[in-house]
Figure 1 (tube, rainbow, N blue to C red):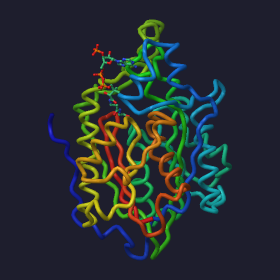
Figure 2 (spheres, rainbow, N blue to C red; figure 1 turned 90 degrees about the vertical axis):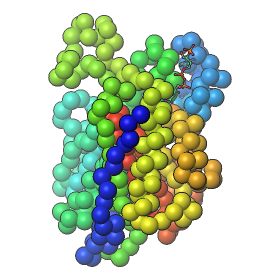
Figure 3 (cartoon, rainbow, N blue to C red; figure 1 turned 135 degrees about the vertical axis):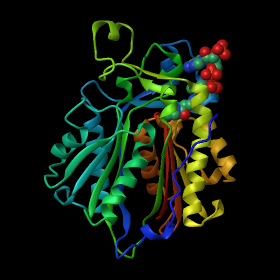
Length: 345
Ligand code: UT7
């Protein structure tokens, strides 16, 4: 396996509380559809078993959006909860970033549809695509806009209706994924706690480990491409697994190096929820205790760009950490992409 490179940031302290600016997460929220698909349900759909899914992944159930419920709807619900949590009115949002690989349609962006749903008329809006790393990529982009004095209030959402690109005949993938959305409000809060640093990385040489081949300019939808099931997600599970562990380790170590903290200082690590065995392996490599690692994938499966946002919301509201604690977000996904964010809560 080739090494995964992450650009080294030269001056770790420069972006935190820089020239009277600071980027704080002032509210979080999440939403999952009400329909639950259990492992027992999947046993009736493909040749699989609760035992296989549980031991290989840790997943017990996932949420599936209704036929008339789309990514923008999930995103809007999560956003409303995050805005309420932050005490921010939608008219005060200046930028909306939606991280997703399952937009409602190629264009307009899902972010524009969310802006319409929220009545956030002052906000610019765009989508960001970094697969399962999308939420962390979006946090970093939001931070850049806040620290550069462009905006004071940014809404970041990770939202997916993965059930729309899952091949329900492919047991290798259909047992893994679910639908949902997580959101965070980021604001300039000078002198306050906040996002210390965010790491982003990518390796396009490994683009063919995890992809949807059809539906883009390379292979527009035709009767043949649809018949060949090219509009569904495909994944090389084993290779993806190995890269996931390595990439999240690299991203975590870079974030801690920049901020000169070691693993014992981190109160809670919130990794992308793809596979319990991946999370355990990353924790072991980092020297973290099982208590430091947050997991909720048994309830939701892998929700791609939504996963870290949903987990962050649950961790915050279940009292896993308190003001002043250091928390570390980690993600990995198709692209390949990976990222981390170190936050003083
Ligand atoms: O979010 C983006 C990042 N995604 C990930 O990080 C996912 C990374 N990959 C994984 O989590 C794991 O590789 C999987 C859960 C996808 C697969 O676990 P694995 O331990 O790597 O299993 P495998 O692919 O080596 O498959 C082992 C066996 C195969 O049978 P044979 O060839 O050994 O006879 C598969 O056909 O398990 C079989 N298998 C299944 N059996 C029952 C694959 N899927 C299933 C299934 N039920 N659903």
